[in-house]
Image (tube, rainbow, N blue to C red; front, top):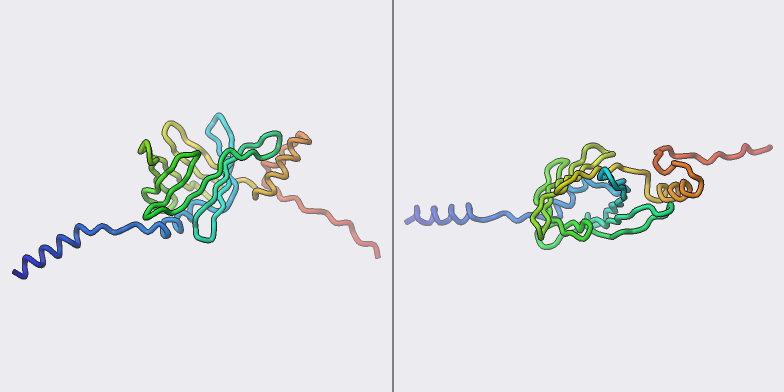
Length: 176
């Protein structure tokens, strides 16, 4: 009789699924995504995405293009927890985080079931493999500096927005 109870207990514990903790997944996602502005290049088109991490480890995202030196928001999105899942609104698609290991996050599109893989190559490069193409995310200057330089570039025909040089303000020597 005791053996029957042991087998039932063993069977119940073996069938018990461990639930995913979305907070842990969001914290791990911080190893890949940091609050930064990224230039997104798919070979033919260039856009930008700004990831802004919130205090609860979720993210607000702002996808935009430069139009005449000014940013033009295409769409806003977010990365958030819903139930026991982490969801990323990527260009009006809902991607669910399947798993995250080290510098790689595997996502699945909720409607089509297509796989998306976001991988951190180094601190300045991310790669997003989506069905049919590969997107390269290149880290840019802080958002405010980038946007000011982009407008200056448009007006003056320069290319400072894409230099990572931080210019210092020169002060005049004081006369004593």
